[in-house]
Length: 308
Ligand code: DGL
Image 1: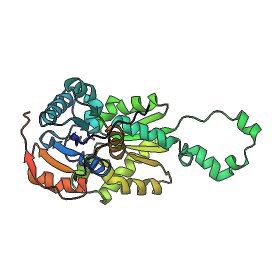
Image 2: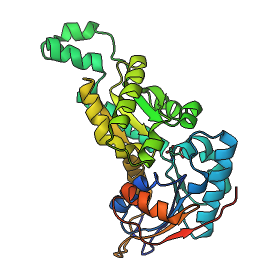
Image 3: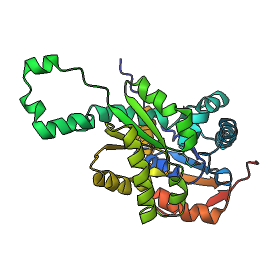
Image 4: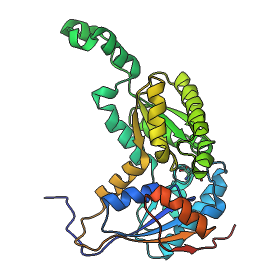
């Protein structure tokens, strides 16, 4: 018997929530991969950043935002914020009756898929192959005595609250990968300033990556564990190139949209996507910064007061 759900004429209404603008990188991917849905996006800009706040505070903010989206008619919820997923996924799932997706599990699954790609075996293995052609010349006897390869090592860049929770380490080690987390607290304000290819950001990124790679020299996968980092992807790839440390870069935003798309039943709807936006602080700032994250101008944004 096929397990494929039968097509439904209904369009899903997907609530997408983030501490601010960054989750629009997830919405951008959702619009690409699940174009038939209706979207309600909430950016809790008045209480941003979440990445430097305590577990209790983030959970309280995130649950109130999730309730708002469910009250607006969302039948699915995507927590587009890595910090809120790390600290409040269980609280949100306990508070709502609708399916709730976070960004961490899909990011970890994407890291696992990347680890299967031979090009991205651990760095020393790659070097061995380049230097000595070890793989090409290995005989069955030598490979028989070779120690089993270590699991691939993923380096996660994220906010301080996310790294302190170790949610990514738990998700990655549960899949058999090794993990090192690196807090990069300066990157969110730099991205929000629009300095996505600025020399200062490049230098900050170089320092963070050098520090992280000292701790994890054989890391071959780089997981972008914060909504803002996909905007820095060209700069990150360029920095890795300059450091002679190529890595497989994973964007949790794209991985999450793929996970949502895989779990939603196929829809018969041919209507174009529809999005409604809410922000808890300046509408003007949300429209201005949000368009960079979303990749196109935002139309109407509603101001919302969720309290303190
Ligand atoms: N959205 C947050 C995250 O993905 C970054 C911004 C913040 O600290 O609130 O972790």
